[in-house]
Length: 346
Image (cartoon, rainbow, N blue to C red):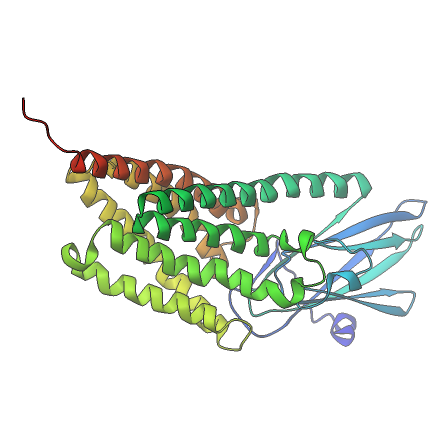
């Protein structure tokens, strides 16, 4: 990599790196110049936290130092034991510094770095906790609420939906590094499985939920086989966690996830047109998730660039989906109670 820098073989990259699913490593080079007349302390913030291996080589005055990050490495071995990947840098007055990054992962291959001062880093960490910690807290609260309702009403649909919401919350906590806040010494052992729990099993559970809600086995045989394919791909992705086959299954899963969004939307439309009391809410829920997830899946597969809109689209759409689906399932329970209520003839 140092020879490639000297020979000018690195190509200019516009924006963040995004290669979809690949096992091949990426090398990136950045040269920092301090044009001010004083030494500066800056913090290099590397994202996303679910990348398996992120090695940073800092070259200053011919001296090379190595810093190892990634969710396959213990958090307490970092220079700053943050749940996010943060590297402090000291830039000498009028000096320069070369940074070489090596990225390798079984997860989707996306990478970006930002150079921040102390106040900017603090604000970034506070917003990160507010946005991502709040989402995980809401997801876990909704899981508990639907689980208790499922137990109380002995309802299969509510049980599946509760597990789906749990998978979203756990997977998001792993993807965004929230797990490292509570289990820093175990994160490098658990995070791959938790990310897969949030991808593979959430796909399998939402496909099973659509099967049950829209009764595809008897009403929509054309969709039933496709939903079984999605369930099998989700289980295969989860079972291959941390192995060489995971990127292949995960890529197939997200490719199948794109048409699934519109299959679910079509089924919701049919239910709405049939006069289902909860049909409008099902349609709204799957419309919101379809838009946000489409943007996110295309970014994950490498077809859209990594930016704040594509990175947070799934978070926003999942939040809307969870709230509206909760209302839709409540309508379903009310309709079942009304149907089961004995009729009194005067």
